[in-house]
Image 1: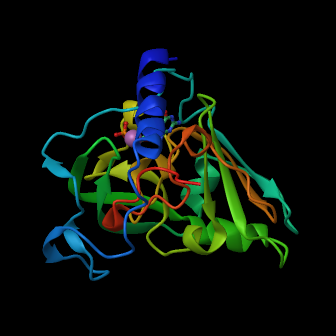
Image 2 (image 1 turned 180 degrees about the vertical axis):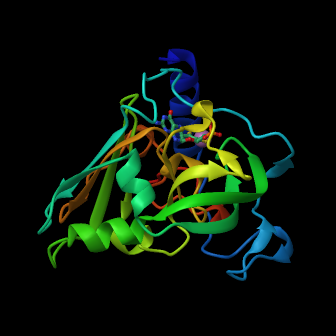
Length: 224
Ligand SMILES: Nc1nc2c(c(=O)[nH]1)N[C@H]1C(S)=C(S)[C@@H](COP(=O)(O)O)O[C@H]1N2
Ligand SMILES: [Mo]
């Protein structure tokens, strides 16, 4: 694990909170042409990069197309495992969206190929009181979303990027992409998806990062 990166980011979140920084005002910020959700192309404090950086805990899990298995379950009528062939047998989607990392870079106009998380949820049939989703990755990383957000049609289990297989260092064979959140909400090397009635917070969410993580509100840190 990249302990110094983890310590640095954790300290940054604590400083934002302790220095008297206020929670950012609930007002849309950013610049550039509106995207298809009516939000400015470049969120506040971000800079567009050409090359897609790699950012993670530094653990390199031994996951390949051949051994990848996704466990889907929690409080659902149906728990199941998906392997690579099972994933490809589901209806596939393509989407173009921007990718915003809380460390201030954005990689624009990525062509994603994969399966909508919504499709997986429909198969799992979460109980009616499920309101949260908890993601675990093969490197031990975790993150969480509200169910409502996880069902947005642009939230994908991605296995293709710009016409090629998703590169291993970006979470291949399969990762989650959540375009309307900071990129830490999308687990690389996805291993397990749990549908839950109670909220469970993930790796950065318990280290001072915002639970809602909305780029257009400069919503980087947790202030509670
Ligand atoms: N499994 C896993 N997923 C992860 C992370 C991680 O450390 N492990 N880091 C998150 C963070 S902080 C970011 S910014 C993005 C970076 O994705 P990238 O390396 O493809 O740019 O992955 C997110 N998903
Ligand atoms: Mo990040």
